[in-house]
Image (cartoon, rainbow, N blue to C red; front, side, top):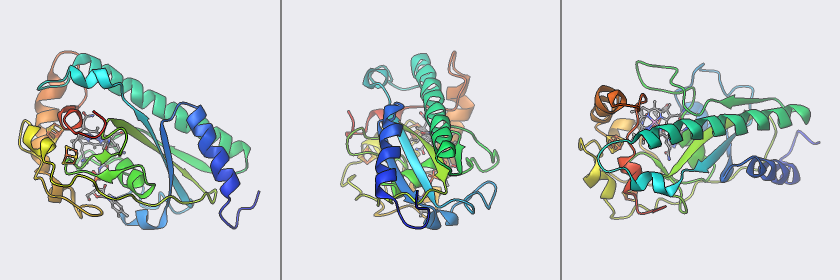
Length: 237
Ligand code: B12
Ligand code: SF4
Ligand code: SF4
């Protein structure tokens, strides 16, 4: 296996194995541009060449039940999706190890900086650079086929896989997520590539306060989730 130049055959094989493990979408990003992100630890990407973005779609009927708050079923599906994604990333890491490569699965839903609400690396930036979707006005990653009804995980690797590129933003004039947000957290601003900060897209604290202060305290929810800006997006409905 050549480690010096991009290996298209190996990329195809590993992507097929990831799909076989249950993923619906998989793409590859170069780690270089991602080094500008807030990372924990700051040298997280230093020994890796590529970040693989893996997504699974969520069952459509779950969102039909969401009206103005998360439902207990959505909460359970959210946890199940995280478990499936963590398992796919874990199993793929074992395949890389067997093939002589190093790889690190980043948890699907772990907050490592509780003050600033950051994961070790943001899966949305990786997903965007790997061509899985664009950053919608909701600040969610929107896939052309499944919309924002996907959950994501990232796997870092030193294998020189072939890189996929970002895709074009297709939000256009739509403002459905802005109009539906129960706390008016979505500003409705579009971006051709990505927002320089979360506050360019959102009144961020309004969303956090709603999810943490109210929704996570509802019976059988227990997580800071919502689902409304996901539900209303025309992509994936
Ligand atoms: C902490 C967290 C929260 C916090 C803070 C959210 C936030 N926007 O940061 C709270 C509790 C509020 C929250 C809420 C929600 N969350 Co949340 N959350 C996370 C978590 C664990 C970390 C996010 C993080 O580190 N953000 C840091 C900021 C700075 O990054 P960002 O939001 O991606 O935005 C920047 C980058 O994307 C950057 N960028 C984009 N492309 C590029 C390219 C380059 C080169 C660079 C340099 C930068 C860059 O531009 C943005 C602005 O700076 C992730 C899991 C993960 N590890 O990614 C899930 C995650 C983001 N959450 C998710 C979801 C679905 C939600 C909710 C809808 C709740 C729900 N499940 O019902 C809401 C949506 C709120 C919203 N409109 O954004 C999904 C998103 C899936 C998707 N399709 O996009 C994720 C990815 C979990 C997963 N495994 O799928 N969440
Ligand atoms: S998660 Fe809920 S509160 Fe936060 S931006 Fe989306 S609709 Fe608004
Ligand atoms: S609801 Fe409309 S504006 Fe919001 S992310 Fe989806 S397409 Fe973009």
